[in-house]
Length: 212
Image 1 (cartoon, rainbow, N blue to C red):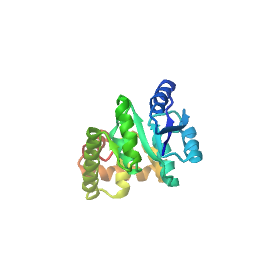
Image 2: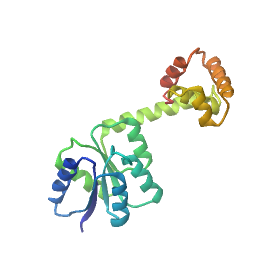
Image 3: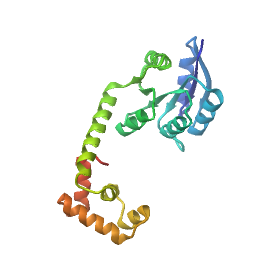
């Protein structure tokens, strides 16, 4: 029985290389090659492949956006994310969305074939060092969030995150549908509770606690 595969990568040379490599495997069947996220979604909905090998960074709808939609639609296709470099935040989101594999583009052909077989059998294939870093980051964030929740209100935490993200008071007010005056009150209270005296202080605190 063939393992039916959809490939998606916006770099034509990589896409062609993957296709050439995997077509040489007798029990692999490439049912579609896609250049962007929309094409990948259409191909998965149409062909219902066993495996989708998906580039994480593509213009328009990227790999994570595709993964979110597949997750929401509860499609059975198992996804292997393909990436040139692993980012802990991307790995964490991919894990939450049920990704079955995360592989580096530098991986040799035999290892990619092994990855596809393992994912098809129901297992996961994850690059251990990157996953370990991602899980460590997640644990630090959860611990930091618990600590912050003891000090700040949920609304104050929202404001602190937005300040740390570089938003101005007016932008924060618009996003939260509150007045700029209310934003200033939340900031003032946060300064007092955290013993900081500036937006830079809030940023450093947020980074230290891992809440951004």
